[in-house]
Amino acid sequence: MAVHESDLVILGGGSGGYACALRAAQLGLSVTLIEADKVGGTCLHRGCIPTKALLHSAEVADSARTAADFGIKVQMSGVDMAAVLEYKSRVVDRLYTGLQGLVRSHRIDLVSGTGHLVGNKTIEVDGQERYAGRSVVLATGSYARTIPGVVLGPRVVTSDAALELDQVPSRVVVLGGGVIGVEFASVWSSFGSEVTIVEALDRLVPAEDEWVSKQLARAFRKRNITTRTASRVRNVIQSDESVTLELEDDQTLEADLVLVAVGRGPRTTGNGFEDHGIVLDRGFVVTDDRLRTSVDGVYAVGDIVPGLQLAHRGFQHGIFVAEQIAGQQPPVINEEHVPRVTYSHPEVASVGLSEKSATERHGAATAVVYDLAGNGKSQILQTSGGIKVIRAGGKDEDGPIVGVHMVGDRVGELIGEAQMTVAWEALPSDVAPFVHAHPTQNEAFGEAVLALAGTPLHGHN
Ligand code: NAD
Image (cartoon, rainbow, N blue to C red):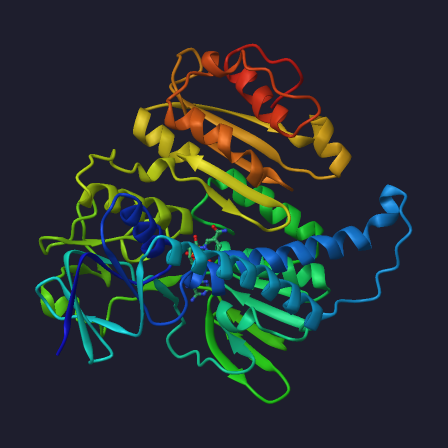
């Protein structure tokens, strides 16, 4: 069997894998990138990009529906799902074409096929060719988990099939009130569906600060999205016409469609990892903080590494590993500085610690919430929510800002300043003098920091 050699062989061309390939090529390494499907992976083809396109169509639908509140006469006559899907595909296709061009122009050897680790830093593709690297990067990504006993079908789907629906379902039940669950609930509600979210834990987006969950629950209630927390499904029965869900509390729900959004699992089985010494923990690849696996010269990046399963973390992992393999000393990635944005209506954006973790970590923490009701731009946009800024230390102490949590339309775009503030361990008094443009939603962050620095201008609670 022919063995092709290069400096670096990467298994998986998603966010982590392709970012690694581009950076390694920029640093002069010869790179082989092995991908079974399309470069761009889940994020570009079945995740971030297509879902955000649907969310944008949903926002347009909401704008059309509420246009009269802003003095604009529009008649909303419905959602043309075929046209929505076409718009979504146009966005994805354009980015995909651009990405393929980038891979070509970096002279990356893109190999199409399914790769298996066969030891000796070598990947075999479709049992035919072998690719050996001086280093190997595993970047196989993740898949949508399902619930044991719940069988997928035309009316019970994961996000993969939900992205291709050519009709708006009348009644949807979303299993899982995490990031995917609330984003799809938001889309369908904007498109006119009756939506119920069933979440096993006691609040929506349970990984976020509790204040965020309360704000989101309140906003969803106003949108008539029903949320059933601390609730689990016992049985899901599909027929040609509908789906019946039996909950553990003996109640039943009827729906036309069920979305299963209960998390994503690492794609690490059946590809030779464990057989060739890669240590896994509950399916995830165990690495040190420099993303080295248990096998010398083999690294792992992205969703297969325990932690936040976010595309931008995968990118950063890929860049980090490429630079390290090229002999540089990139700083270790701090997982707590990775920003998190949920693109529902309203959006959720956060970075750093929740109030609870900040209190546990620092003994005491002080938080201020600035309500968007007092923010001019938010009133112009007619959005509600708030910005919560947390600093280490009790009321009379001074300590760095360790967490920022935001809820409201468009707040995702505000995460940059919050992220730098947390990553640079800025004190409220460091940030307070910065002037924020008026009128912007960004001012609400400035106001919260002013309050934390002891010099509030407008009201806060
Ligand atoms: P998640 O972990 O965010 O949420 C899954 C939710 O399902 C949890 O709240 C969990 O308590 C609940 N759950 C688990 N089993 C359940 C059951 N049997 N019944 C009811 N609820 C149950 O996972 P996700 O929403 O599937 O997203 C997967 C990954 O993709 C996440 O890591 C997420 O961060 C990432 N993602 C990110 C974005 C973004 O950044 N905007 C968008 C989509 C997905």
